[in-house]
Image (tube, rainbow, N blue to C red; front, side):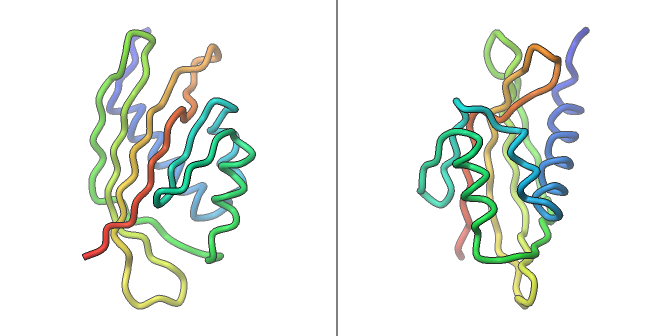
Length: 125
């Protein structure tokens, strides 16, 4: 069955950010032990360390508003590069923060995807 890169990337982005905004701990299942996160220059490896970082961020509630999603198929085994930009609204803050995030998704034997690489940056004016 042929994979539709646009459908996969859009479904992933919707799932990732809705989970991030409502239940950050639930993101752990999207990562594996080989997964890496670079968050504002800090590096983390493995699902447990990545989830630990994401759940320890210094805000409880946030809402992502996605502006753009760009994607490319990656490599012979069916990986996907997904590049996201948008605004991050923190609870109680007047102004939204601009962010960019890149995901390298890899297929699982079960037919879904996991995040192999994840790079997040706030975009300061």
